[in-house]
Image 1 (spheres, rainbow, N blue to C red):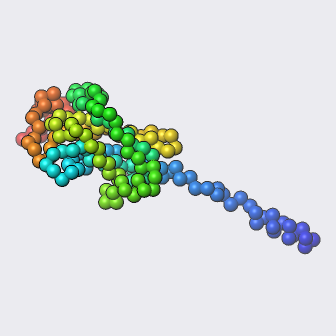
Image 2 (image 1 turned 135 degrees about the horizontal axis):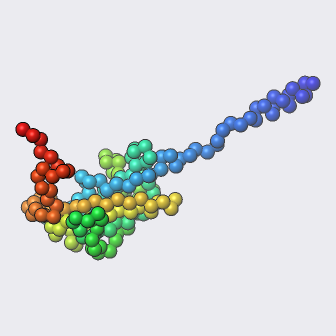
Image 3 (image 1 turned 90 degrees about the vertical axis):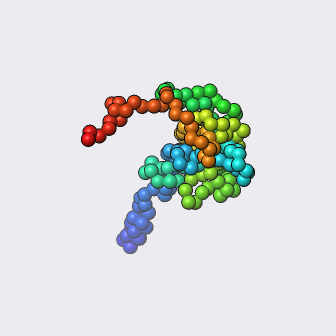
Length: 182
């Protein structure tokens, strides 16, 4: 009888303890965003000329919180095509590939203040005054692909403002923009 009670106690202690692994996909990168304020034409060589594009890429999880990601980011620059659902025109130059697949690259590119990754894209046509479309596509190590595009004024930030583009103008009091009545 004592032997039977002892066996029941030992078997009862081995009950279901729940899952032994954590589902970390809940906190994986779900969205890529080119930061609209910090992504811009930039000078990388401490001279007055614009040398390329400083791209700031941030990732968020499904809760909208910033997260780190691992993989390769492919950057492409396109001519701006106004009045089109897809603003990308012809591709300008060859794509850049920026890796954040290793611990060393993670540490070098991670900006703790912005909680995002910094990439310096050297490009000879930077600062020529034309609008461009920058597209970033991330091929995650788990096979998923995230992408974002951003229209940039490709001009020297210290230079003159760009000329008004009549294609981008919105007439006053149009249905999408109303002036308040006095």
